[in-house]
Image 1 (cartoon, helix red, strand yellow):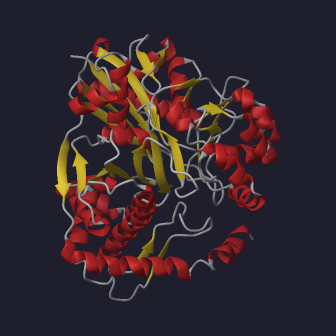
Image 2: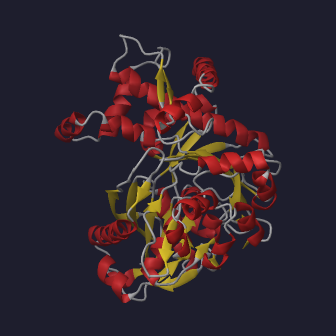
Image 3: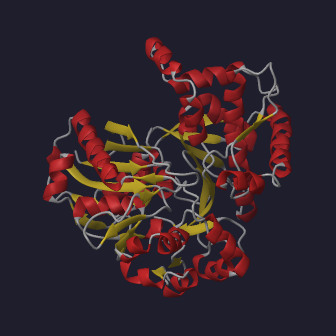
Length: 508
């Protein structure tokens, strides 16, 4: 039996899983990822600490699996898209990595939109510019940290940095960099004209050679083997943007399924033979399955908000440990106790960013003395789900035909009450898959193809992905959730004029 390691670098956690040829997870390990927040709007990561965390979870997953290292046929890496991880000419990280929830470059996006730069670049990138993409972040580094800008040897995305540390070879995997805003999606090449529009032409030579998800891009070095427990020479594949990996790991290899990922980011996506033009959606990127574009609506507004909520009640961890359950099982119970018909405060899930205004902040609106933390738990579940629905509605306007189901991944997929809420709010069947770590499974699938275990990604998906749950929308609740969703949208609109004034106080 051959085994494949999937390594996933998310916004809040680093995880590794070992899968067999049937997609069965035989061992896994994960650690929380420390975020550095030196000032409001800045979210960073120590790149050396991040590398050591990757090594630790790979070693832990291998030990827990009991798999012999000589039976590991390869490893693939996925990671959050956007953000910025710079490697220096001095053969060390240039600075802390910048995570995709960072908002420091929002003024660049605002100015480029006003000056027409976004429109002109978008004709090539087929995307709106986002403050967390490498383009605006590189412009920020050039202006604020010129000595760091001058030291740049390689411009990496998150998982490509990890692959570089595993192999010693720099590479830019297509699915990830096609979402960076630096690439012409029609030619599938980096475009110097885009860099010139952003005022960063100097980084053209620091963009690594392009590679594909199902390509062997190097092998594990002696040093990386010592740190991870893998054998030297183990094949390392291109890996994927984590939203591609979750889609593949959820079995999305045709246009008739929508993939929703409730993680740090609210990711909502489907695949299409042609990109969606005219700025109708937030982003088109190159999907890891050749011949398809990934059409995406996203924002950092999903289950990361729930993680914040959980941290406000540290005493729950001890209680759950005594009862032999996870804190998320307890939250599921809390939410189920509060009926959908009961009014709970409107929660705007904007603690890490927003899909409505660059300066919008997280909020509970409509609290009263009768509300308990159980009501607030339902508020958080509902607010995150409503935000996913806003993205879904934009996606459906661009779809050629209605999807037959939503494949749900991330934290919500592991909570039956929440998965049912997604079906009720969105009005579509929701399906979940057996793998608990769909991103890790996605890159394991690509690795299986790269080393010849399967001929195509579709073949590997058919063998390694299985649907484990299905939730039908309860149409008797649709009117109730439609009313709550309407109130959510009105609340968002009503607060639109507040955020800039609030930001002035933050900046003061």
